[in-house]
Image (tube, rainbow over the protein chains, first blue to last red):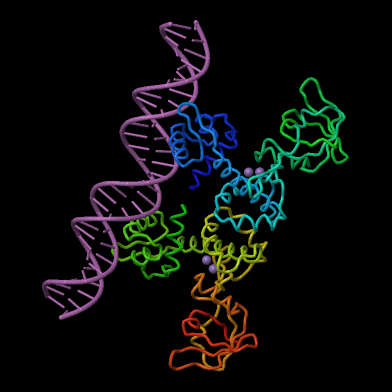
Length: 218
Length: 218
DNA sequence: AATTAAATTTAGACAAATCTAAAAATTTGT
DNA sequence: ACAAATTTTTAGATTTGTCTAAATTTAATT
Ligand SMILES: [Mn+2]
Ligand SMILES: [Mn+2]
Ligand SMILES: [Mn+2]
Ligand SMILES: [Mn+2]
């Protein structure tokens, strides 16, 4: 598989094309910052290769082989992200760009040994689950911080927005995965939250709270 | 720079095109397993980019920028080889293929941090020197085992042939970098050697001896 | 239901990197 | 020095992945 083909497969998976829902060429084009006509060409090519199902004018969805392929690329992407953070002291806002390149390196042994070196991590630096060698992975039971009730405690386990700006903002405010957060108060007016974290009280906007995943205690 | 361009630059460097000697398109084509006509096209392209000097019908040689580029790629290649051996338990005959891919990953921070993780190695698993960030490196003072006199001792510091078959052969015979070797006798007939290594006596062919580098003691 | 708007595909073009076959230049051998 | 052999370049074609502009299909609106 070429790098371009792999990127298409991965994007389609992320857009939800793993079940029978058809993903439109426009949606793919927008996500990949390319043109719909290019997507059509690639859809035909990948359909012929058996990686996806393509219904003219309707859209695409991944075949079983397509899903397996996508999971393999995502596994590599996320393992490399862990490597960059844990072994090379990258911060979580710097890893994505490099992982986009590293995910295309072809060597089964490489990725299995990397997995071992990292002690078989279950989640990447952004809290996203890492598929196992055979494509299985556990989506964590998590909720957006903005949607949990007042006076409940949870552990911060992931981010929805993985943009560098958001991640740097979290760093600046000492919000990190693993932190315990308690919602103290919710402002009716703007949906902003008063929270307690690491002993300190903090006021965060709805914008922030709706991009942070927490796992409720017990 | 594209992957293809980088591979051309690297190959030309290895063929000795760093000084004023011109390297022929045929030599490059043979080394890269491509056609001379393809090399001509690329030579023009790289000349226009200022990476090499191209004299029609004569050949090419790298400019200063070309040499710098080559050294940067070689640095990456060799650092990744060290990583694969030291951190992921690859054997020295398995690393080249994967390093050929990894050497094209673009991230200055990645390679500097990798260097640090590996404790700034000076040589790769095959005994080849690793250029520093600013392109400097020390070619070790070494000789082919086949060319040192009888009754001299040396430390095995490198291999000339880096093919998988040769490296596996050395593994099988417990010949590894760092071993001390003494030449006991040289057969006039076939140039084969009787050597002493790790307490054992060994008989090796000229073919082997002329592909092993040793550094004489003192 | 007909018209308009939006999404999608087709047709044709382009750049990068490669190839084959033919032409041109260089080198070799007498 | 000249013919033959070799090397190198040119010309034209191919594949991959992309694009623009036009045509077609589907969806939305009156
Ligand atoms: Mn990522
Ligand atoms: Mn991630
Ligand atoms: Mn190598
Ligand atoms: Mn090497």
